[in-house]
Amino acid sequence: MNYKIENDKLSLEVASLGAEPISIRYAGKERLWQNENGSWAGHAPVLFPVCGHCGITVGEKSYPVGAHGFARKSEFALRERGEDFLAFSLCASEQTKRVYPYDFELNVRYRLQGSSLEVRYEVYNPSSEPLYFACGGHPSFALENPIGEYEIEFSREESFRSLVHDAGGYLTGTAEDLGAGKSLKLREKYFVDGNTLIFADTVSKSAALKTAGKTAVCVTFEGFENLLLWRPEGARAICIEPWTNLPDPVQAADTEFCKKRGVIKVCGKERIERSYTITYF
Image (cartoon, rainbow, N blue to C red; front, side, top):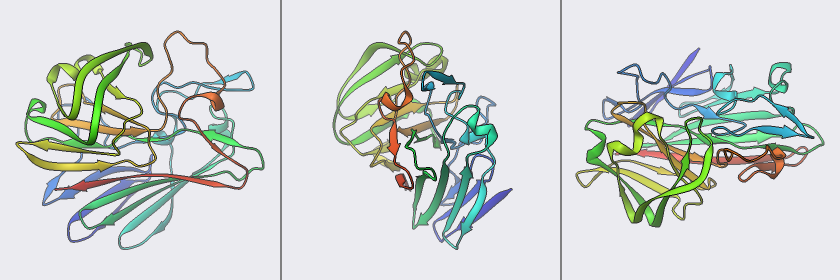
């Protein structure tokens, strides 16, 4: 089922499947990618309990969680709604425990605030034992112009060293130097054959998508260490993705999930939150 809220600036439609936004309209225009060329049917999936290709091994047993986790393919319950917010929840089940051995409650809340959309993830641990998770966003942004006419402006000076991944999405242990500064000009060649730009441990906590000196959108991602940029093949769209974890190295043995970089611990009966905000212009 789909649910819709709006204010005088934004309208938001979210599907219960994946608790995924499927439409965001601002100033009369659709701002989410709508698969115009058939290259990617997603819009803004929720990534949980992993982002990218990140294996889960607990007590030396490996679980086939799959890339980006299972939340994006799971049916969420509408937990609460108001004039300016929607809240969805997903709980552990026999099905989730086949790929992720923890008891959990994942709550995803969307709130409209003027021309901004806040996306908040809350993970509750109902058991007495610790649970471990990673999470991230994968929001898309429709582009009016070719991607080469855009740049990403960061809030602070950055060293643009993009971690290189192989065809399977695993890190090779090398990095590509794309320069330094506050602004990264987007180039067609960065995104061919499914390539993703992976910036680990960014100093900035906000990134603005700009064209011709004007800001189209700004993503603020406090609480997320990494920022990734990806484009559906041949699309006039870009995904700006805040992640807590990174993909696994290509040749490294699968270590215990709790020891992986960016994996978050939630003690028994406690809650942990992460959020990011998208502001449209």
